[in-house]
Image (tube, rainbow, N blue to C red; front, side, top):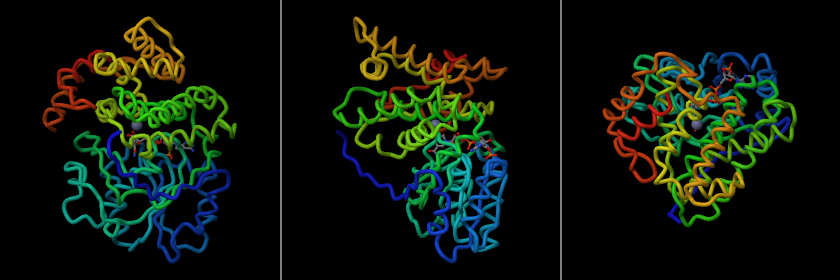
Length: 388
Ligand code: NZQ
Ligand code: ZN
């Protein structure tokens, strides 16, 4: 097992009716910026619950954080925080709102040009330099409610870039599974596939000695397979909703990544597809993931076979046979979850996508990616072209 350091300070408050705990979770005397997205919180009652719990606090609202949050939008919130001397930010929404708030939190006291936060991938490690924030999660998918990473898009250059650091964990996250009832089917499908792929990025590498982490990962995958299709149809079923929400958090709160190698190339390529074509994040992963497993078959086949046996109960004559069947099972699952796994089914005019992405990776120096640093630019090209 690799050495590791497990640090996660987020207070995770889970279950029905927990939003009322905001009253005590938000620091006393805080002046709050309530940040939200396009307005779903007004239709499903979440806004009313939050406002009721914040009765007596001074609250300024900032709406309009878009899916795949934009640097340009977030900088407007940064200005408000500076002007109004806000001391605490509350993110109410899905991954986009939470990620946006992480950027805002770091940008307020950042001493350089804030675009550097994204372009230079600044790491925020000093909690005294960021604005503290909490979250009320409305869409289980990204794990952003319990991790310290974020992804922000620069509209001007169509770049989707990451930021993070140990100072950017939420102080608390309220996760009430009843919010799932108001989600459009498409977003639940996305959430399950995003969480599934988060596990795969940290699991589907090569055989190693971290036995418990493999079992953690496999149990999350199995649970998502068990509940995924039905939670889409019955989002008000509390048993399904609560398990879906907990799986999504556990998939990317850092636990399963400890002591193991990880990949993340499906996400790196997927982010480009969202930046270029505004394809939903999870849908880009369903397009790229299986083809990455095919192109990296020699590197990943042992782990693919283990995944096939343990998660899908696949039997076969050889490692290769089981590994191939495991990829097909994964594609079938993505289809069952409403994904269209070809780029051509998700956008038009995609013919130059592979060259475009390869050039961008080349400019950024991303020439040897993945758990074995063997995902070269040629392999990236092959993966994207196979995905057309
Ligand atoms: O904006 P509103 O009106 O709230 O509507 C949202 C949005 O249109 C809607 N929605 C959210 N909760 C709802 C709801 N509609 C009805 N009822 C509810 N309860 O859903 C739409 C999508 O929301 P969004 O936040 O964009 O989705 P998601 O949570 O999937 O977040 C995606 C973003 O997270 C990033 C992605 O790249 C993408 O930008 N990621 C963040 C990660 C992290 N921080 O660790 C990791 C992930 O891999 C991912 O990259
Ligand atoms: Zn993701």
